[in-house]
Image (cartoon, rainbow, N blue to C red; front, side, top):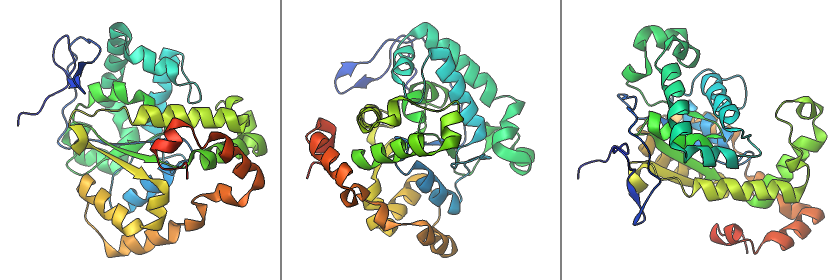
Length: 300
Protein backbone atom coordinates (compact mmCIF):
# COMPACT_ATOMS: atom_id res chain seq x y z
CA UNK A 1 0.00 0.00 0.00
CA UNK A 2 1.32 3.45 -0.86
CA UNK A 3 2.38 5.39 2.20
CA UNK A 4 0.85 8.84 2.74
CA UNK A 5 3.32 11.58 3.35
CA UNK A 6 0.91 13.59 5.49
CA UNK A 7 1.78 16.73 3.53
CA UNK A 8 -0.82 16.72 0.76
CA UNK A 9 -1.29 20.26 -0.53
CA UNK A 10 -4.14 22.03 1.21
CA UNK A 11 -5.30 19.02 3.16
CA UNK A 12 -4.02 16.53 5.68
CA UNK A 13 -4.82 12.84 5.61
CA UNK A 14 -8.26 11.64 6.65
CA UNK A 15 -8.50 10.57 10.29
CA UNK A 16 -11.34 8.32 11.47
CA UNK A 17 -13.35 9.22 8.39
CA UNK A 18 -13.07 12.98 8.91
CA UNK A 19 -10.89 15.47 7.09
CA UNK A 20 -8.44 17.12 9.49
CA UNK A 21 -7.67 20.83 9.53
CA UNK A 22 -6.50 22.22 6.18
CA UNK A 23 -2.81 23.18 6.03
CA UNK A 24 -0.49 24.45 3.31
CA UNK A 25 2.15 22.16 1.87
CA UNK A 26 5.38 22.15 3.91
CA UNK A 27 8.46 20.40 2.58
CA UNK A 28 9.59 17.95 5.30
CA UNK A 29 13.05 16.82 6.35
CA UNK A 30 13.89 13.40 4.93
CA UNK A 31 16.01 11.15 7.13
CA UNK A 32 17.38 7.64 6.60
CA UNK A 33 15.66 6.55 9.79
CA UNK A 34 12.49 8.04 11.25
CA UNK A 35 12.92 9.62 14.67
CA UNK A 36 11.44 7.94 17.73
CA UNK A 37 9.57 10.68 19.59
CA UNK A 38 8.81 9.83 23.22
CA UNK A 39 5.74 11.50 24.70
CA UNK A 40 3.73 11.30 27.89
CA UNK A 41 2.59 13.28 30.88
CA UNK A 42 5.25 14.57 33.26
CA UNK A 43 6.07 12.15 36.11
CA UNK A 44 4.71 9.23 34.08
CA UNK A 45 7.92 7.31 33.39
CA UNK A 46 9.19 9.05 30.27
CA UNK A 47 12.68 9.42 31.74
CA UNK A 48 12.83 5.80 32.87
CA UNK A 49 11.68 4.50 29.51
CA UNK A 50 14.14 6.71 27.63
CA UNK A 51 17.01 5.54 29.83
CA UNK A 52 16.07 1.93 29.13
CA UNK A 53 16.00 2.42 25.36
CA UNK A 54 19.27 4.32 25.50
CA UNK A 55 20.87 1.30 27.21
CA UNK A 56 19.95 -0.72 24.14
CA UNK A 57 21.46 1.81 21.76
CA UNK A 58 18.83 4.43 20.96
CA UNK A 59 20.53 7.75 20.21
CA UNK A 60 18.76 10.32 22.40
CA UNK A 61 21.17 13.27 22.23
CA UNK A 62 23.16 15.18 24.81
CA UNK A 63 21.09 15.49 27.98
CA UNK A 64 21.33 18.03 30.79
CA UNK A 65 18.94 16.11 33.06
CA UNK A 66 15.86 13.88 33.03
CA UNK A 67 17.07 12.11 29.86
CA UNK A 68 15.91 15.09 27.75
CA UNK A 69 17.85 16.15 24.69
CA UNK A 70 19.07 19.68 25.41
CA UNK A 71 18.78 20.54 21.71
CA UNK A 72 15.15 19.47 21.26
CA UNK A 73 14.25 20.76 24.73
CA UNK A 74 15.31 24.22 23.57
CA UNK A 75 13.22 23.92 20.41
CA UNK A 76 10.17 22.85 22.38
CA UNK A 77 10.71 25.94 24.53
CA UNK A 78 10.68 27.97 21.32
CA UNK A 79 7.32 26.43 20.35
CA UNK A 80 5.91 27.26 23.78
CA UNK A 81 7.00 30.88 23.58
CA UNK A 82 5.85 31.26 19.98
CA UNK A 83 2.37 29.98 20.84
CA UNK A 84 1.94 31.43 24.34
CA UNK A 85 1.78 27.98 25.90
CA UNK A 86 3.62 26.30 28.75
CA UNK A 87 4.18 22.75 29.90
CA UNK A 88 1.41 23.24 32.46
CA UNK A 89 -0.80 25.26 30.09
CA UNK A 90 -0.44 23.40 26.78
CA UNK A 91 -3.77 24.23 25.19
CA UNK A 92 -2.42 27.31 23.30
CA UNK A 93 0.12 25.03 21.63
CA UNK A 94 -2.66 22.81 20.31
CA UNK A 95 -4.61 25.80 19.02
CA UNK A 96 -1.59 27.25 17.24
CA UNK A 97 -0.89 23.97 15.45
CA UNK A 98 -4.31 24.29 13.80
CA UNK A 99 -3.52 27.75 12.43
CA UNK A 100 -1.79 27.55 9.00
CA UNK A 101 0.17 30.78 9.46
CA UNK A 102 1.51 29.82 12.90
CA UNK A 103 2.20 26.31 11.73
CA UNK A 104 4.33 27.40 8.78
CA UNK A 105 6.25 30.01 10.76
CA UNK A 106 7.13 27.61 13.56
CA UNK A 107 7.87 24.61 11.33
CA UNK A 108 10.13 26.71 9.09
CA UNK A 109 12.16 27.67 12.17
CA UNK A 110 12.36 24.07 13.40
CA UNK A 111 13.57 22.89 10.00
CA UNK A 112 16.24 25.58 9.88
CA UNK A 113 17.52 24.51 13.28
CA UNK A 114 17.58 20.74 12.72
CA UNK A 115 19.22 21.10 9.31
CA UNK A 116 21.81 23.62 10.47
CA UNK A 117 25.17 23.30 12.26
CA UNK A 118 23.54 23.54 15.71
CA UNK A 119 22.57 19.89 15.33
CA UNK A 120 26.01 19.18 16.80
CA UNK A 121 24.38 20.00 20.15
CA UNK A 122 22.21 16.90 19.67
CA UNK A 123 24.67 14.54 18.00
CA UNK A 124 27.78 15.50 19.94
CA UNK A 125 31.22 15.73 18.37
CA UNK A 126 31.75 12.03 17.65
CA UNK A 127 28.41 11.45 15.89
CA UNK A 128 28.53 14.84 14.20
CA UNK A 129 31.87 14.06 12.55
CA UNK A 130 30.47 10.70 11.50
CA UNK A 131 27.13 11.84 10.08
CA UNK A 132 27.36 15.65 9.68
CA UNK A 133 23.54 15.88 9.65
CA UNK A 134 20.40 14.15 10.94
CA UNK A 135 19.50 13.21 7.38
CA UNK A 136 22.43 10.79 7.23
CA UNK A 137 22.00 9.08 10.62
CA UNK A 138 21.60 5.37 9.90
CA UNK A 139 21.03 4.24 13.52
CA UNK A 140 17.80 4.45 15.57
CA UNK A 141 17.53 7.91 17.10
CA UNK A 142 15.00 10.14 18.76
CA UNK A 143 14.33 12.30 21.79
CA UNK A 144 12.23 12.48 24.91
CA UNK A 145 10.28 15.45 26.25
CA UNK A 146 6.84 15.27 27.86
CA UNK A 147 5.95 18.45 25.95
CA UNK A 148 6.33 16.45 22.73
CA UNK A 149 2.77 15.37 23.51
CA UNK A 150 1.55 18.79 22.39
CA UNK A 151 4.39 19.87 20.10
CA UNK A 152 4.18 16.65 18.05
CA UNK A 153 1.78 18.30 15.61
CA UNK A 154 4.65 20.60 14.60
CA UNK A 155 7.33 17.90 14.64
CA UNK A 156 5.18 15.64 12.48
CA UNK A 157 5.46 18.19 9.68
CA UNK A 158 9.22 18.34 10.07
CA UNK A 159 9.60 14.53 10.22
CA UNK A 160 6.52 12.98 8.58
CA UNK A 161 7.75 9.42 9.13
CA UNK A 162 8.23 9.92 12.87
CA UNK A 163 7.27 7.11 15.22
CA UNK A 164 5.80 7.70 18.66
CA UNK A 165 6.14 5.94 22.00
CA UNK A 166 3.64 7.13 24.61
CA UNK A 167 3.89 6.06 28.25
CA UNK A 168 1.05 6.76 30.67
CA UNK A 169 0.60 6.25 34.42
CA UNK A 170 -2.19 6.26 37.00
CA UNK A 171 -3.56 9.79 37.26
CA UNK A 172 -3.50 9.96 41.06
CA UNK A 173 0.14 8.87 41.26
CA UNK A 174 1.06 11.48 38.65
CA UNK A 175 -0.87 14.22 40.46
CA UNK A 176 0.73 13.30 43.79
CA UNK A 177 4.23 13.27 42.30
CA UNK A 178 3.73 16.64 40.60
CA UNK A 179 2.33 18.24 43.75
CA UNK A 180 5.20 16.90 45.85
CA UNK A 181 7.72 18.35 43.41
CA UNK A 182 6.06 21.76 43.36
CA UNK A 183 5.47 22.01 47.10
CA UNK A 184 8.57 20.34 48.53
CA UNK A 185 11.35 21.33 46.13
CA UNK A 186 12.96 24.71 46.77
CA UNK A 187 14.79 24.41 43.45
CA UNK A 188 11.51 23.83 41.61
CA UNK A 189 9.85 26.76 43.38
CA UNK A 190 12.54 29.13 42.06
CA UNK A 191 12.58 27.62 38.58
CA UNK A 192 11.00 29.12 35.45
CA UNK A 193 9.11 25.83 35.22
CA UNK A 194 7.34 26.25 38.58
CA UNK A 195 3.60 25.66 38.34
CA UNK A 196 0.84 27.02 40.55
CA UNK A 197 -1.58 24.73 38.71
CA UNK A 198 0.22 21.66 40.00
CA UNK A 199 0.40 22.73 43.64
CA UNK A 200 -2.94 21.00 44.18
CA UNK A 201 -3.97 17.44 43.44
CA UNK A 202 -6.99 18.62 41.46
CA UNK A 203 -4.92 20.96 39.30
CA UNK A 204 -2.25 18.35 38.60
CA UNK A 205 -4.87 15.71 37.84
CA UNK A 206 -6.57 18.03 35.34
CA UNK A 207 -3.25 18.49 33.57
CA UNK A 208 -2.77 14.70 33.50
CA UNK A 209 -6.15 14.38 31.82
CA UNK A 210 -5.23 16.96 29.18
CA UNK A 211 -1.97 15.15 28.36
CA UNK A 212 -3.40 11.65 28.08
CA UNK A 213 -6.33 12.89 25.99
CA UNK A 214 -3.93 14.61 23.61
CA UNK A 215 -1.54 11.65 23.46
CA UNK A 216 -4.29 9.23 22.50
CA UNK A 217 -5.42 11.63 19.76
CA UNK A 218 -2.03 11.59 18.01
CA UNK A 219 -2.05 10.10 14.52
CA UNK A 220 1.42 9.54 13.06
CA UNK A 221 1.45 9.26 9.29
CA UNK A 222 2.25 5.56 9.59
CA UNK A 223 -1.03 4.95 11.43
CA UNK A 224 -1.27 2.48 14.30
CA UNK A 225 1.97 0.81 13.19
CA UNK A 226 3.85 4.01 14.01
CA UNK A 227 2.71 4.48 17.62
CA UNK A 228 2.98 2.42 20.79
CA UNK A 229 1.13 3.11 24.04
CA UNK A 230 2.87 1.78 27.15
CA UNK A 231 1.17 1.47 30.52
CA UNK A 232 3.68 2.37 33.24
CA UNK A 233 2.36 -0.21 35.69
CA UNK A 234 2.54 -2.99 33.09
CA UNK A 235 6.07 -1.94 32.24
CA UNK A 236 7.14 -2.38 35.86
CA UNK A 237 5.25 -5.66 36.26
CA UNK A 238 6.41 -7.27 32.98
CA UNK A 239 9.50 -5.34 31.86
CA UNK A 240 10.92 -8.00 29.57
CA UNK A 241 7.75 -8.30 27.52
CA UNK A 242 7.40 -4.51 27.23
CA UNK A 243 11.04 -3.91 26.38
CA UNK A 244 11.18 -6.65 23.74
CA UNK A 245 8.15 -5.15 21.99
CA UNK A 246 9.68 -1.66 22.06
CA UNK A 247 13.04 -2.88 20.79
CA UNK A 248 11.28 -4.43 17.80
CA UNK A 249 9.40 -1.17 17.28
CA UNK A 250 12.63 0.86 17.40
CA UNK A 251 14.61 -1.77 15.46
CA UNK A 252 17.13 -2.14 18.27
CA UNK A 253 18.91 -5.38 19.24
CA UNK A 254 18.33 -7.14 22.56
CA UNK A 255 21.65 -7.05 24.42
CA UNK A 256 22.02 -9.23 27.56
CA UNK A 257 24.57 -6.85 29.14
CA UNK A 258 22.15 -3.96 28.77
CA UNK A 259 19.30 -5.99 30.19
CA UNK A 260 21.16 -6.49 33.48
CA UNK A 261 21.60 -2.73 33.85
CA UNK A 262 17.96 -2.11 32.98
CA UNK A 263 16.53 -4.42 35.62
CA UNK A 264 18.50 -2.58 38.28
CA UNK A 265 16.63 0.64 37.40
CA UNK A 266 13.13 -0.75 37.85
CA UNK A 267 11.25 -0.23 41.11
CA UNK A 268 7.93 -2.13 40.96
CA UNK A 269 6.71 -0.57 44.25
CA UNK A 270 6.21 2.73 42.41
CA UNK A 271 3.17 1.28 40.66
CA UNK A 272 -0.12 2.35 42.30
CA UNK A 273 1.81 4.10 45.07
CA UNK A 274 -1.29 6.13 46.03
CA UNK A 275 -2.73 3.07 47.78
CA UNK A 276 -0.35 3.59 50.71
CA UNK A 277 -1.54 7.14 51.49
CA UNK A 278 -4.98 7.85 53.06
CA UNK A 279 -5.22 11.32 51.47
CA UNK A 280 -4.46 9.95 48.02
CA UNK A 281 -6.89 7.07 48.43
CA UNK A 282 -9.60 9.60 49.29
CA UNK A 283 -8.68 11.68 46.22
CA UNK A 284 -8.84 8.55 44.10
CA UNK A 285 -12.45 8.03 45.21
CA UNK A 286 -13.21 11.54 43.92
CA UNK A 287 -11.71 11.02 40.47
CA UNK A 288 -12.02 7.30 39.74
CA UNK A 289 -15.10 7.86 37.57
CA UNK A 290 -13.31 10.34 35.33
CA UNK A 291 -13.76 9.13 31.72
CA UNK A 292 -10.01 8.78 31.20
CA UNK A 293 -9.54 6.86 34.45
CA UNK A 294 -12.20 4.46 33.22
CA UNK A 295 -10.82 4.22 29.69
CA UNK A 296 -7.29 3.47 30.91
CA UNK A 297 -8.42 0.84 33.39
CA UNK A 298 -7.69 2.87 36.52
CA UNK A 299 -11.25 3.09 37.85
CA UNK A 300 -11.20 -0.25 39.65
